[in-house]
Image (cartoon, rainbow, N blue to C red):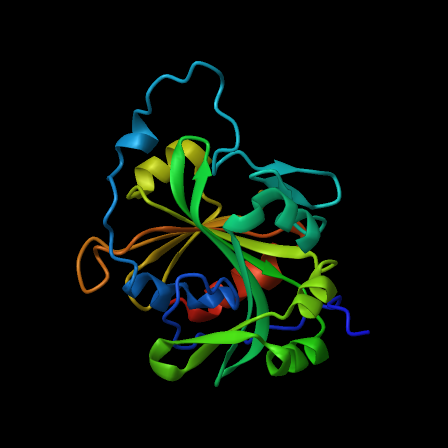
Length: 254
């Protein structure tokens, strides 16, 4: 039986992506940001939320790290939580597909269109490890597909059998697109000072937090992508260099 189990490697150079839910390869943030035009509230909910009756939990900046270099956020443990657990957690709100494009290997991805992280709303994208052979075969058994990126990408809806086969796949990355606009001051207020700052080719700013496995992408103040939304990415700290920093560094400009 085909069983998703072994993560495949992502390319190290950025490519042209047009879907916000494409969390891997993680160097694609520059182009992802271009189409994420802001339509929600601005900084208010991050800076001055209404006083909660109980302490807020499940917030985007509440990342717990264990001694083995794994992390937990939104109740999900990166490198540990399996797709079956994610399905139970989100139920009908979860959409799952194998995503394929002309210039990258297929990936197993899921997304939650309307996600609430404490008092912050947004969209959540989840990436799972999967055997490369299974990823090639699953689209042939798909029960439907959606085309995006001007025909360059296809999301294949899994058959019931492939849903079952994918159940043991481990969660390896999360991307959260908050509805509220962020700026660097707000991010540092919540996450603290970044260890490293990178500038992307589209003028976006990447704030890196390797100790917690977090990278925050902020759109530029001016230009074509100035009205884009921010993006917060999460990986296990032990994999931060490979899955986040290295591809983001490769995509950065001096």
